Amino acid sequence: MIRSDVWCLLTEFTQSESLRKHALAVEACMRAYARKFGEDEERWGIVGLIHDFDYEKYPSAEEHPYKGSEILQERGYPEDVRRAVMSHADYTGVSRESNLEKALFACDELAGFITATALIKPNKSLAEVDAKSVRKRMKDKAFARSVSREDIINGAAGLGVDLDEHIAFCIEAMRGTAGELGLAGKEPQQNED
Image (cartoon, rainbow, N blue to C red; front, side):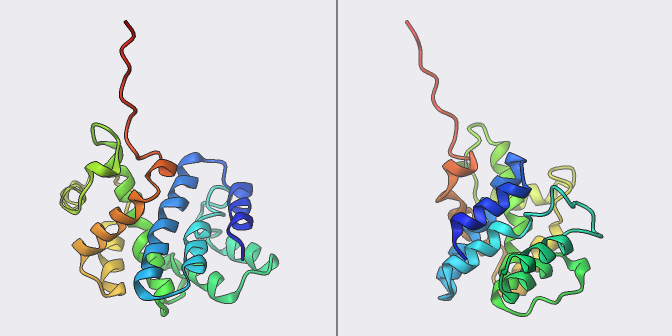
């Protein structure tokens, strides 16, 4: 698996810039956890990058991630990668057993929530986000209401990490790709005299 090929697969199926950025955010978190756990950073990053590649074309629970798994199998992706993609959705019935699977589940919803938190900051920057601000927003049920707080909490627990540490870890991982994510902050306005 080569990242450039995986990126082509993602962009073939995903036109939405926000979904592409979500994939990049999850990839950043997955790469960071791979380094932390001494795992294969490239493989973990690729799983983060493609976990939702089929979602735009097949958004229903009847199709996502089942269609994606079929496409990955047709294209020769390994079983552990397909299994991780399947396990990130609770409704598939695929249990999360490996650290790869647990990390993907733990990072998926949280990456989206961190992004939403950054986007409401004055400069729309990850530099303005910390674990405390994310936890505060998690209590507001109207904020990013489609993001499952329960999945964020259960994901950290399943991975065996403290929730606040998990949030801070993912924020830091995403900061490394803030420019790609569109979360590096607004450019200062130039005054023209």
